[in-house]
Image 1 (cartoon, rainbow, N blue to C red):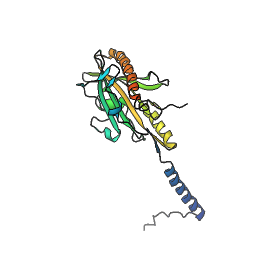
Image 2 (cartoon, rainbow, N blue to C red; image 1 turned 45 degrees about the vertical axis):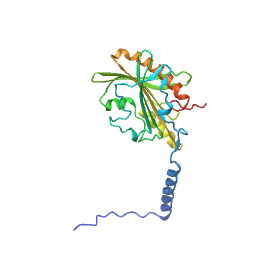
Image 3 (cartoon, rainbow, N blue to C red; image 1 turned 120 degrees about the horizontal axis):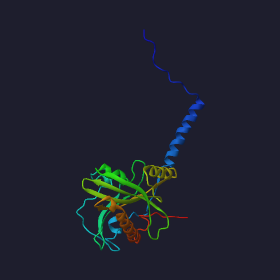
Image 4 (cartoon, rainbow, N blue to C red; image 1 turned 180 degrees about the horizontal axis):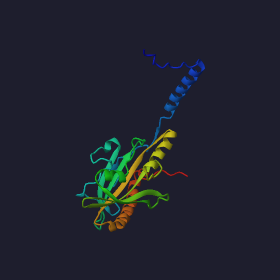
Length: 241
């Protein structure tokens, strides 16, 4: 004969029930109050309009090389992560070419955040041959701009890459730093915007990378100056003492 296998749910005393209800209500109120508020640019600029076609001696020029997507997928899925993406190629008076990729996102959350090139390139079939942290020296900007310089290879294509990510008022260099920044701002009820600033050059051999990186730094200084005329806080954050 089978016994009664049903487990009885214990009844809570009235006082305990009241406390449980109070805690649930408090949790709901806290959740509403803690809903992040946007802390983004007042009027996000249109990248096509704020990035000049000429930056010092660098001029926009069509290129036969297709750029690597700013997403982890080769398909054009960037619309789900970025509000705007701009890709151009610039050439200087000596014939040196640099590919520029800017990706702006007005809302950075744990599940929706800017993808780093060391993730995007391998996801699209590239092998990473080298990577190191780098502090970019931009004329007129006294605070360190932390980013990275990398080398990727796919078939016969060898590419030197320099980039930084501005997330709110910081320059995270790892996924952990990005998550931590998003978490800190979220606890304060804020949502940061972010932008990926990536430049790259096709090189013949790995030993050409240092020369490419120097050109990148020169170009990035011109880029910050040119964009800063119309959108001074797009590529670099507002630093307050």
